[in-house]
Length: 507
View 1 (tube, rainbow, N blue to C red):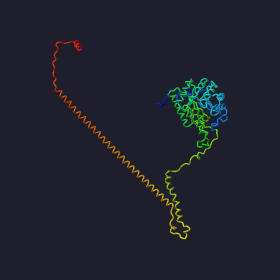
View 2: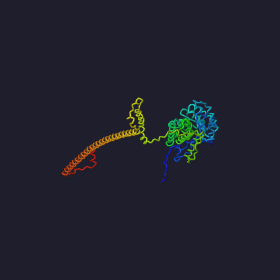
View 3: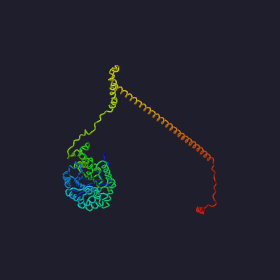
View 4: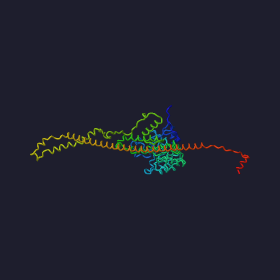
């Protein structure tokens, strides 16, 4: 009998949703099993990686993130074109950072003009991402929807606070919506229900569960996405059977760890490779939790993530994946000098050497004795020959004697401690033995009482049975002495019929 893989049965599937239009349109989602579980179902469309650009020049980006785009960051259209032509972007995400009321507070018309300009420079799907301020996003995205009618943009984030205005504009001008909720399964479902009640088809909705960059944020997002996938696939919840999108690059690269220089954190290694790998690791995590669209920033992170998608989907060898290509100068970090000095102390030898260290002060006492014995100017006329001729104290012998004395004292203390421990153990053992004996005696007494009760009950039952048997014998004997008497029966003079008997009984 051959080996058979146990397979999960799915009650639902993820909707396939088209983004963009024309020959360059892409379909995301459509899988009928958990992510990459191609032995259980189909995954007709691989996840899409969209490269992000900003509508303003970034001022707080890490040097590693800025290096691939430093010649185009001031022109969003040129930036988008470079991402497509040079780095092979499958889609572009335009982050509308300029519209933030707490920053530049650009108008809806300015933002719409930028979107229109970027849209004309590329031939791949365009995702327009607001500033996450509900009122401002509603104002701007309604205008963008109108200006770009029929282009099938993907616009968001759409929240419970602004779903009516953006939802109506998206329906009216033919765009796809990103429904956003704060890392919660129920809230994600609620936004989809609100959009559907408004009249938006769920075939035009992509779910944004909110993305964490590192640590707890990533773990929370991953868990919620996993539960969303389970609800859609195994429970057949049709309100959650939508592809998911993660705004990953924006979150990872604003983390402190992605911006620390080699001077600030030399122990964390090359800052360029560090941040690239952070983004790639986050991407893999979200892919495995069910993401269909990843928004990423660095071309090298995207290269590693695409290689992962191809390997896990189509097979192959990871040895063929090209290494990270650096754009910044390499760094030379002396990790040996940063590491603490090794502790090569051997515990046994340290214990042996410890008493010798305690005896060291004995060497200092000898000179004090000699100083007392030395003649003072006053005693020069009266020397003491006996003291002068006395043998000098041997420091080593004295130290050795002191060590031996200390060792003996220590041995005595240990022996006393051992004896006390033995005595205590013996006392405890005696107490336990006595308690066990008492418990056994009590159990034996209870068993004897119980046995006596059973014996008495059995004896009483036997006596009762004997008595009843005797009484039965007596009754039988008395019955045998009774003589059956024959009764003479004489027929009646007139015999009545059955009918007459019946009538008499009835009367």
